[in-house]
Length: 367
Image (cartoon, rainbow, N blue to C red; front, side, top):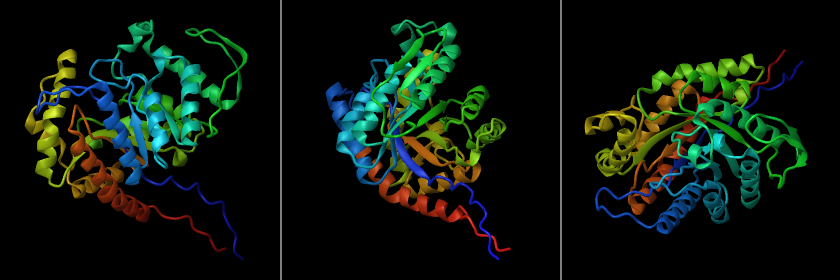
């Protein structure tokens, strides 16, 4: 007799995509800064190409500084939604602590309607703090604000009418929140910078985790992913169906030397500007080259280099998604377009095929 045991939940297919902060800084080669409107036009062309070459996700970060044009990612993503067909459109991240979750939900629900069910939301506390004084929030409540507002956002997904009470936002008494998205529920990820507390929070809520790895050896981050899965199980969530994304810097060109030569000046300028604000030492060329090695953090090199590194990290993490920030700082638009084409046509198909081969399929047990 043959009995059919319940098949384990199938792991989601491996996804490869991009994220951007929409930098608006001088080109380190020419000294020229393009206009904000030109930057957004270039960005929309890049997202459109990413869709055409079969990439899975495009994420856009929220920043409130003069060196970025993405203070309202949902608006830009809405324009991208009208130009694309398949690519998922996400924030990367939305600074939820300094925003109103009701308005955030409404904006992403609207994006979901425009894109016919391709919107995602990545909640985070943000790597910069300009939005807190800009919108009148106290940095002393940094963590408390995020926890409370994430709680409200998740409740907004559950149904159109909500009753809710907190400390940092007026209460809601049986009010409807509209529009409702195509997806039910609207996908929400938690962006994590590497603290165990943030990892456990994502796991306890049963939310997918996007882990930023932008420095150091990838092996150092494996314990955080193990912690995430263990904590998810402890909170009665199935870790097998909770995807993990790795978000990292990188650049792709026809040769490894070319990839380093083309991307280093802009990455150095961008990271050194942030470093001066935060007390970091200047970025050195030898450090950047080391980060491109197999056990470095950055995905820099030829398509073959990138394939090798993705598969190496997949052995470590068994993650389901990789997002690469191809433009750390300002890169020439045509070079960005070529890098996107290489990622979509030379890297993604090889990686997907190999990871699909590695994942065992469910079997039927004969008794």
